[in-house]
Length: 131
Image (cartoon, rainbow, N blue to C red; front, side, top):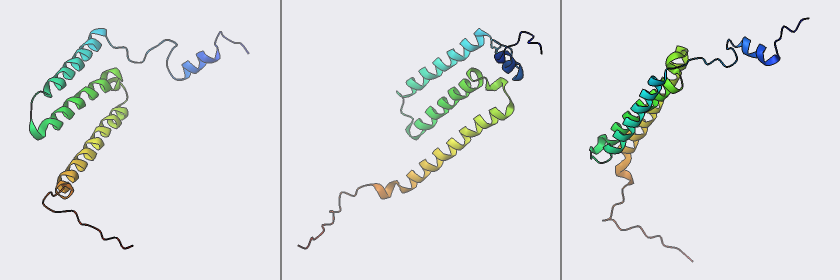
């Protein structure tokens, strides 16, 4: 029954495959600063886009830029690019479902928008109250 100099926390780290102080996916700093620069650039592009009137494409352009930024954060800062492929599939499939929900909601709102507009020419119906 020798202790071999291991504590309970060291044994716990040995079981999950990581040594104490070990990091799973170290990335070079120039790559991280490059991703940060791309995120700052895309943020500036998003703010600059607000000055242009693209009509009905405004939302699509902003959502496209936001999606690119979210993918960059997920791939490099959340280390999904170097993780198990299943985690990447789950992350990207969430974007597919969010896109489906937004498309369905916008198409439903577009189809029913005429029924929600107030018609100024019609007088509101009056209700007779009996006392």
